[in-house]
Image (cartoon, rainbow, N blue to C red):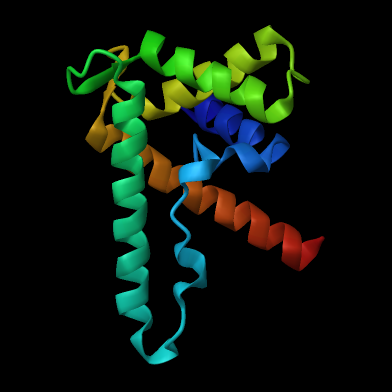
Length: 142
């Protein structure tokens, strides 16, 4: 499991723009929402709700046959296309496939070859948290 987590974090760190979201044009933009510091908990809950709704939209896009789960094949089709799109085909097909496989392995916590919405949401939350940590650490420590 450590290898998988390390591979996912490596993939995230090497191309941070690919972390959030799978489809960047549909990212909820809640980060500018901190208008009232007194209501920070309310603002955080709004951000969580925005990401949850966003994750549901992305999950449905990947679930090609609408059966409520995303198979590895469905995930790979969307993720590889996305990686190629954002990198301008700068990565080899093998590298794009490896990155997509690493992310899928991380999300498929029960090794069944498919992921549920619950697994996807939990995994994306972990990825976002780790990415935020990496970004903030880089900003602090250069």
